[in-house]
Length: 269
Image (cartoon, rainbow, N blue to C red; front, side, top):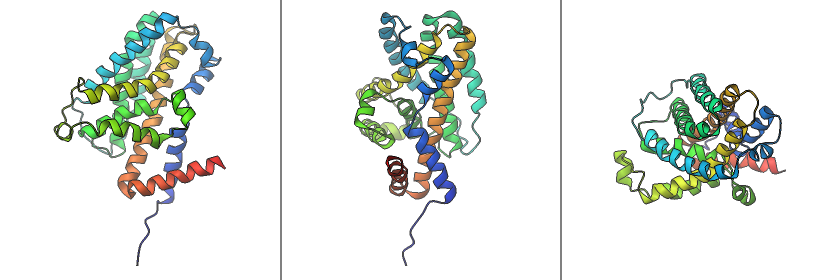
């Protein structure tokens, strides 16, 4: 007799929550609610010359973040994530940027990104991931791309699995020996291309964040609150992403993908 594996009702519910987070990232909506005007109007407050500086800052930030995320992390799978602690760190970092203005916001970006990555790794660990494994740490880096959508993604209706496949193509070109030894050089050609792909999507969210921080609401307090929203956004994406990965380990990728597609079809009806 053939036994057909099925997700438990609890896991179906968890996958449904993950689907909503992954297919409908809400960073811009959250910022619009906080700022009180469409984020597109906030973007106009940024001087045109700063857009180029911001893009360069994002590229440098990802290089710094990559070095951070491939550094050793304590491995204690299953322990609860300290989400409030990381929000506090993000708020402190954002307050400094908000107080000193746009140059400080860009200077603060590497710090807030590294804090965000640490928070993502913390959530990965709480979902049973082995954060001492380089594959897991690269999956943490993927969350930065999954949290942002480009106009090209929206036009092509590229969803969560489409983005994962695209990122996996880059990762597949990394030598397996490098992954096994946990050694990865930022100068490796594959990593340069991977970071560019991540930057294209992560930059969407970062630009929205910086634009919101430039709205003259409450100065340093504004910067702190925007960073909390930024952190919450990526914590939600991380929880969803690593929930899917946990279910894939439990049931197999094919079954989880089929169940995920059921939510997609139901939404289109």
